[in-house]
Length: 301
Figure 1 (tube, rainbow, N blue to C red):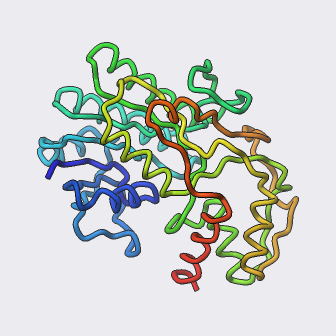
Figure 2: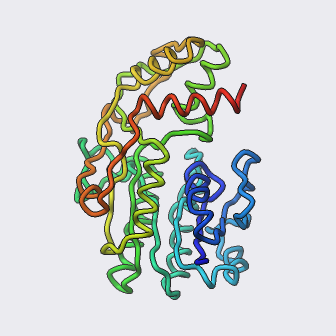
């Protein structure tokens, strides 16, 4: 079996991708934390390491000599610390690229972010000039540019994907959809923003399908691909839909202020990925929400 390295394999996205590929690849996961019990996969080899620390990364290098594919989901999820964001999302990616640029790998999938677009008007296209506002967006763009530079100079086989808001079972409850679901299931009164924002939501199985297509298909390297549903939905409608399905809990709108860098409308143009990968989202929002609610009903209450 070929080996695949999933950096951030203990997180929401890394877990689902690992689970989908576990029978076809020998999977190695690098993360700064151990997997939660509910995300632990027996066949995955987990290593706890900070890839932004060169000395610690060198200690694990011997375990990575036979890697054929790399997916970098790595990065600090709490964006309050600028140094942790910079080190985990940029320096970590840089260390990985420097190491694997000297190896013969099939493809390196760098997970970028929609935050790289900054205040660019939606639907956002991959060829836009970028001026990210948040420090997180800036760190992600630095990683993107470093990866593209490696492709141009060294023919490094990198593909950069920019996912929008991916949701589904087993996501941490500090994200909007699982937060609303769990608060509603617990019959809580909970604060929300005004809810007039428009956001793009992609169900996890569609995201995983995109990753599998990149691995299994020969495509031109050095490309950036937006990954999303392509049709935004209002946050208030999302919250009301969840609340109506669960029939308990009470959202209180206008209690949380929008962040300074937060735009009212964010969603991607996904025509490029449709054409290149012959990929498109299959899970309707209503269906994805229902599946996600069922997971939390069984695993939270």
